Length: 379
Length: 166
Image (tube, rainbow over all chains, first blue to last red; front, side, top):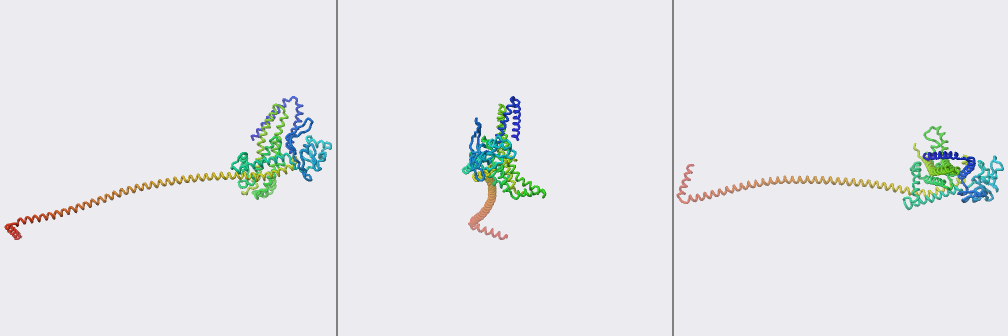
């Protein structure tokens, strides 16, 4: 609550500052048109940031000749299109080129790979005119409507930027925690990073697993709870670094995590759990019939809410933070930009909290669902 | 919702699921089990040590209580012994006194009896000596009297005269 109050106060300050700024603007017309372009650019940049990408870019710039230069490195593209197709994402030229693999042509459109002809034509639905196609195909920034291309979308198993970061976090976690585990072979007390990690592991055990699942059955779920807690937390924290990575902002990632929670819950559900779903004890028979589909639906809604919660919180955080950072460039003013900076700083701190909080909530609710599934009959 | 479905990337889902499950299995084997095992072992150790300390404390208390009890008992026994000894001493003294009294009385009585007997013996002795002396004297006197005839004559006559009287 304290934090939301803080952010409200900061928002109020920004609005006041914006009022002062507009009053100061004499050449309003000129600034407005300039700001409009900038606003669009910022909006596009944020939209772009939220998407996954097929190559690892740290930043890009436009040369005087109007050519886009990208600093970073390409990643492998893996497609399943009547056989495995593997090529480097440098062939796609950030959506500006057509990649050829085994006689098939592919191009990027809104960060998704489509099968095209040799010229990289993207076909749209009926409401699009024939003339706009070519232009759209090469300039993704120009397309502002929600047109759906009718081109074939091959199954895309590319090692995208997000996949790279999932791998990195996996490696980091593996070496970090294996180091902690190996340390226990020599000493009974943690050393180095284990001093930080052990209390966190104990926190997951004592504050999340045991209270929700129970003293006797929590052990089976500890591996999953610990892995998901640290994975979500670390990957959320990495999302706050200037690397521009944003893994938990993908519905596919949160869906995968929620799916595992759902599967574990469903497969560890005991007789009592299913009885409470299909034949709720303690209510009249007609109510039982009404409750059964609701309860059954509830088993899907629970992991679904997990998926949406994590996705939405992280996405919202990134959008707001990036918008405020973008405000700095819109204000271009001695009072507005520092204010945006202060606000962005405060919000970053808040996001640090959110990163941990979302990991905690995801783990906590997963544990709660496992606890429900294994709860014994007390009636 | 449409946008979410549109945004859903199957490839990313696939990799996330694969990598996450792989990570989960690896971490379970190489990290979580050893870490949790070590932590549990340590907690168990701490619990055991605390319990042992508690037990030792209790035992210590018991020992102290026991020794105090023993000390008390010993003290009580000593008191009893002392009291008994005093009683015995007193009874011995009083008994000795009584005995001495009785013995003294007895001795005094014996002495008195002896003295009485001695006295009697002495009196008897004196009597016999007096009798002997008297006889001797009488003898001497008679011898004297009878030394000449006249006197003997006279005596016979006196005696005869006495008999006549009778």
